[in-house]
Image (cartoon, rainbow, N blue to C red):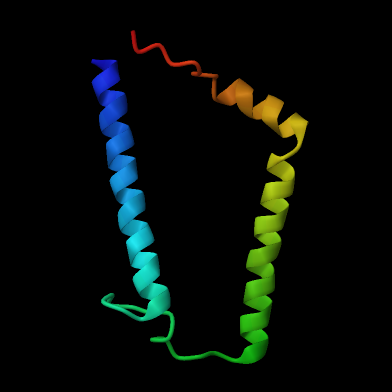
Length: 88
């Protein structure tokens, strides 16, 4: 039963990713989606710059922290290792 649930979960995740990816293509190319990259009202340049720098900074800090061995050891205490999966 767990093999079928794992397959079903994987299939659902794949379909959700595929839909998200196709929507992202439409969003960036302004084709067949309700909201596109060019459909909003532009804001002030300074506010946009600060927002983009803040988001980029959060992304960089998060990736830097997660790459550290201490974080990985701490995380593995919370989330146990499930690999290798035994489907047999």
